Length: 529
Image 1 (spheres, rainbow, N blue to C red):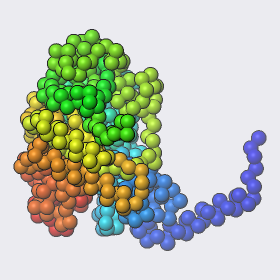
Image 2: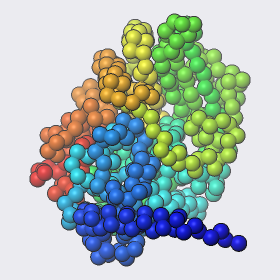
Image 3: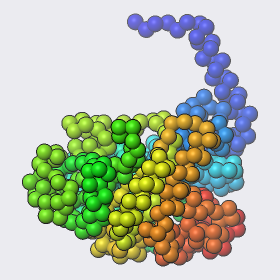
Image 4: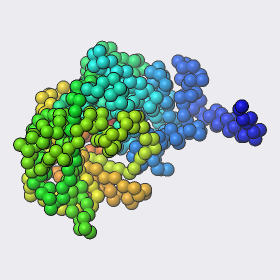
């Protein structure tokens, strides 16, 4: 028998609804956007997808997909409105209406962009949050899947596993990363040496252009399709979904994690890793972490080698005894498992964790962080490594992640996609620092540490240009105020090397008035901003 609602509770709800309604009516931006959207969307639907500052849900919706707490402060610029489309047509309407009303539109899929460029701007703006557009349709007949831009990598991996135990996809290790941003910026993970980048397996896409039209690969043309596979789709339109080609994985894979301190041959292992990890069997991916640590009240450094091998442990041990004896790997260090379990393990879940854990979006999970990147083309000598340990210990907090290239990456031309960092690169570096303390002092301290270590590495990394990875977004690489070709070239050539020119040509053709823009977007050849 239903419990009758108390009169005072009912009156409170009525008052609350009327208050929100009156606030929404008094918000001219909300009203103008609603009026525009209702020209193509039913009024009740349009109203439900607009979350303005007067909406009680505004703060929770905005914060849900903020993944860097540096951009979740009271002083961080906030969008006037968050648009949460439920249908592709809603995206078209949002693009058209934002232009009509003269507001910048920021596009957010998962919120993992390290500099918050998808939800922060210094002028009045809207956020188009794609989290509802997360459908995934796997077709095992042709080994493909259509994946909504708002889906997470964890949801993608789970859906592949539900359909096949011997298929996977080469993408990132963090399950809460949004597919839209990950694939538009290239995307990579533990299968990079076997299968290359995520975008190397994108075969179609659906995108809303600046005119609000929904295009696929055929109707957008090969130039635009090329650009949104690694050049940052937010410069060109709004990706609705990608069609990807799945890749085969064996029934049994092997993972291991090995830690060594400086007193445990870490320098020799790191030196050998630089030439072995990029050249060994392409079925083996070895990531190396370098971290300052304290042991017995003494500051030192530690390396950690984390690996995925597409095969059994006997084959892996035999391979490493031949290629990398310095690591001293035995079967006792290895865990044989399935591909989906390896995905969970790389995401720091215990082996045996149910794959449903990949569906957890972990909302409102944000720490303070800064990331930077580099590419290494010549091994760092042992003397350089020795000085690196000292610098890391001196700074105290910043870690480094070495990600091995080689294998399939050496076989794909640098202009095949906008992502140019292929043959000739031994590995990529991610500089990583996380902290818990809020406030400007902590922010300045830790971001400065990251910059100092990045500066220290200058002699050892790529030059002319000093390259960086677009998906490790770093505003220090350069930013734009006027969206000029010259401003864009500073960061554009670091991220895209020689492919910057073609990206500018595509931008000029599809968005000449530069509606789709952010602080590191591709500019048209002549900007009117």
